[in-house]
Length: 450
View 1 (spheres, rainbow, N blue to C red):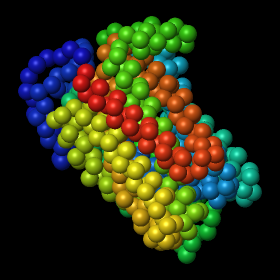
View 2 (view 1 turned 30 degrees about the vertical axis):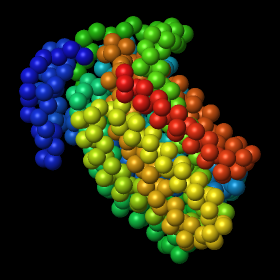
View 3 (view 1 turned 60 degrees about the vertical axis):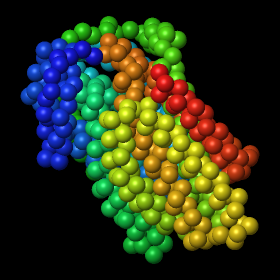
């Protein structure tokens, strides 16, 4: 990006005050004027949007809460393994197609606004399904259909969100922007995790499925509010736009970008390795509950631990991103993930020989979720920021759209983790996760060297 030079002190909100030497970062006078008039407000809206959405996600966390919900309806490891890939993969798949249209719009927030109400209605249907449908088989089918549709529609707005962030948040502030979102959202999420633990306790106030139904209703409330707030962001128009093209033309452009940039190829390889490695995470708690007799209410404890660690991790990784760059944070994420895989493998191999079971096995899993949270936090702070760093402004839509669609395919393939679990067992799945994390370490080192 081009921009004016100078040192500017910016006050985003009462607790975020930073001197940034790169702040006039606009591609046009209109963008510079929009930043001067609306920059702090846009920043606050983006942070609050993230806080509320992450709070909602903590109440209906896919890795822990939704997998626990589905496990009440089925014991199929394949279906359990599909929850995360469907959520993330369905979100990512439409984005190359969306980019072909989005690049022709001077203001990218238009698409985000168009799908807001569709997302809200689908979340309401999901909450009503969990609360009102009685037959387990029907509940399972309706859940997967509505959950997949909600993820797909969310994906339609994901690209426009990142485009707007790229135009309203200065390059050196993006890592910290995501850190504030994840960090403060995680702080509220710690309280949400206490609610999750209380509701999922067998002695809690609500029986299944109403305990999960209340969590789904709260998700609907907080997530809907977060979207409506972000609709209020003031976005400057792009001075130049690419013409709207067919998906075939956009795919060829994306392929040319991939072939022409070694840094971009390494980024794709790194993200793919980390996503594949993370596909084993939903089975951690399920394994301890089913094989070692751990209580299901420990899901709330794991959720609280991960959110609290995320809060602290965002403060650290946001600062590392600012001072040392996003490649360094991705390397840290890869190394932490390797340690996480080694820790859970040790538990799987030693639990029975050492007589670790029940509550002791559940407590032994807490360090694993601490490492998992640090890994995911580092990825959250740096992955999107690194992609925006790599993408030139005139090709930003195709970079982001192609990346998310390609990674969406990877995420859907990671749904085979349930098949791997069935064929090779938990230990075999963790060994594959270790190999993927090792590949991520090697790739992140190469990205850091340029």
